[in-house]
Amino acid sequence: MHDASDHGNRVPPRGAALLVSLAKKGYRALPKSLRVSVSPITFYLYDLLNTLRPQVWIFTGDMQGSLTPISVCVYTQSAETRSYVSRLFFGPDARSRYLGRSWVWNTQKLPKAARECSVVFSEIEARFLRYLRAGCGMVIPSWVRGEAELPRSAKQLRRRSVEPVRRKIRQNSLEYEITTDQARFDDFFDNMYLPYITKRYGDSGHVAPRKRVQAAFDRGELLMVKKQGEHIAGQLIFYEGSTACMAWIGVRDGKWEYVRDGAQLALYEFTFRRVEEQGCRKLDMTRSRPFLNDGVLRLKRAWSQRIVEAASNKFLMRIVSDSDATRAFLEKMPFLFESFGEFLGAFFVKGETPLTLEALQRIGKDYFHDGMSRLVVFQFSPQSTTAESEFAATPLSGLSAIDSRDPTGTFRYQQLSRADWADLIRGLGFTGIGRAIAICPRDQDRKARLQTAHK
Image 1 (cartoon, one colour):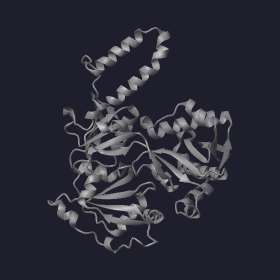
Image 2 (image 1 turned 180 degrees about the vertical axis):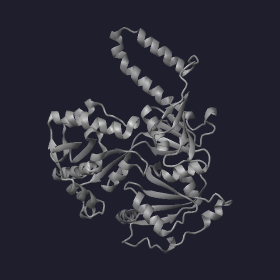
Image 3 (image 1 turned 60 degrees about the vertical axis):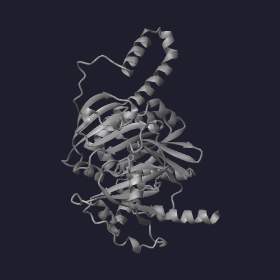
Image 4 (image 1 turned 90 degrees about the vertical axis):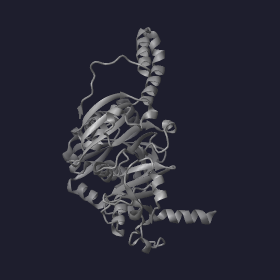
């Protein structure tokens, strides 16, 4: 990422920046004996001010995986998030420019210097959402947490995604051992966890403090994957009653060849086997990013993870202009979002793409994640279409023939009215949506009928 921010010739601080400058001078003037008692308050106030006045950046470049240029205005509280958003849109290559800071209630406005940007992407705490105007952006959780029910059912063990994992474990003669040895933990943290996070995620990776990981190890255990006697990967597990938590993973020296040989897959499979042996009823699979093409989220989905909780930190996304670039981004980046206390998925397709029943079944199979109430497929109106209402009114062939009572089907499908889908994405902005289809799991119908009968 190329940083084009101007750190020279600074103007004198004003407003909140002046208060921060004066507070720092006052803190440095205090005797060291008083700083100890003042520090917690100072850090709290600094963190609060940093949350209230996020940094403003402009990122420009070719969108990841294509030669389509795009510009994004980003409001962010941390370097970690800034790096993550940059990689999300552009991969490792992006040009950036720092514009200063702004109050949190201005985070959906475009600064004058960012008038050419097509997307506004903001990081915000949930408690501050009420200070923003309605329709300020779609609310996307910065992280989601998932759980898996234990023991796995016979149906889950027969899934087509399970056998390739077991085959890779057999082919590479992978085994595991459980240890509580401190020397093994030190080797895991220094030579597996740290290099794996830094090599895979770069500046956008969150490295947990050693003290925190050590505390989890002290009340848990370390599962280590071995190949021909060599420890090549590790997974820290700790327990809270009947729930096990797979907290941190690492791969020896961050080597991708070990991942290619199945080390990460083996960590997941062996962890499930271990905690099932321990009689656990749930496995906490911890945090994942909310974008449905994210590798970690897709990997956990293959192990029947159910999304149960969202982080208090949110992303707000708003499209400023309907263009080929913004449409291409939305098509490449389906995501989870929150609406009226529910998790929903958003999947975008071209207007020219035939939305057949077979296409919808494939999208549901590949992208629906347990814990969602619905996965909504939004179809853009063709660029040549002048009357979107006519496009939206065209019925989709095959949907009316689906019997929602069919016990063999996985999903049911519903073409949403313009009012329904517009309400779902009213914060997204100018997107040129023509129509939307909701994909819902059939077991929700069954649960609703049982609840009604019980009442």
